[in-house]
Image (cartoon, rainbow, N blue to C red):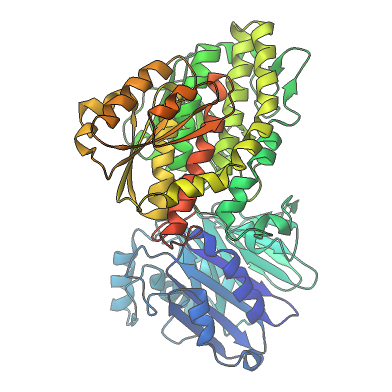
Length: 612
Ligand code: AGP
């Protein structure tokens, strides 16, 4: 989604802004722009549709900027086509005020009409331009920039993370947040503002998370925070625990590749310090429920989107199997509109890598309103979901920059496993079974390392046949959601159409698609449904489909049935998705690279979807 960076201080602004928005490229965008006020007090705007490098190429000589204050933006179109005109920053009538904005102004049509009646002239199709004119209108009357932004925003319905500068007050940046994240980076004689810590981490680790309905006036050595109702708020400076290596590719060519390879560590980080070897259980410090409350949970509802939703589906198997508590998994976007049946005996678990997904956030609010306790499983520390849930557990995967989620998925599975195991031990799981779970979990990172070492073999499989136009992913039981995840990964980064199904469902429809051009990827570990899957493989072979099977070394009979077999180490069924998904991630990576696709920034996608 859109990205924002702002700077005020002692350094030349332009390189900081450009570097900052480049750090946010991974979020997805279609155009980029900057606004700076130079030492002559001129407001300079530069924007272009397309990639940031395109904008850079057309910049006037950098030295001419001489500016220590500026804002920048990457836009992901919502209102108005992706174009240079619609790119941010947007201006008021007098070209004095420049604004960049993430989010959606829902009542922009009414506001626009009123402003046009007052004589304002509009140049773009965006909702954001309305904000520039609205602030201008109020500012002209009250002549206090910060207050004018506050007053203008009281008239606005919708969501925003926005940053505004004015030629008339060139020593300050005004920022405001409602529903779209903004973080102030605190420096010495300089301050930053960004929509994502990835843009700040090279400059400072001291940050202030703006909350909804707060606005900030930032100068080079101060920041005043107020609520929309004009009450002043004491800023709380927090330390971020990211370092620069997390947001750089290092020895890898792509972030997605780096993140796939990081999984032995990221999985271990998700369970490190959370194993209680004495009681053979997990210890999730963030789960603030007493034993009585935990035991009283009558149902669990998991809400999430995309890959996180797939993690939820695996979590359903894990928790039901270990704790025998009924679990439902719902798309967050559907949950909020279906008047869900939940009460104080329901534990709602929201899963989100970014912690900013608008639909998941709305589902959380709906659940809390209905009296449920909500747990958050998130990656980004201090994110909105982490703050708006009653309690939660971080997955500690580190920065995930590739748009296609990989390491966050396996870390989410790890935390869901810990949760199911912990709930199970509080109910009916014996210490012996608990001990076995702990032992198996500890072996997972090493097994993931082994699977990653098959990378070249997986690449050969991709190169062995023409690139397909379609693919089918089939799995059963706890590996059915892995089939969905494999198909999503392939779609997202290679644009190959792919579907995931429970293997037995194939004969109820998808079998009609199978011919010699259709690769069918079977996830068939050596478990209680293995024999059933073999029959499904036969059905595909009988129709000349190409079979790629992922199975365990103990199942070498499958070699005669499949075109390609990827043998992976064995684990218990409940942990098998942590292993079976790795070859699928590598398969999609190599298909995408073979097609020449941009794996880190696939078309049309955004890393965190902060609009409904
Ligand atoms: C994952 O590869 C996707 N890009 C996407 O489906 C993502 O999982 C979804 O948008 C949810 O994001 P979240 O985990 O940050 O809430």
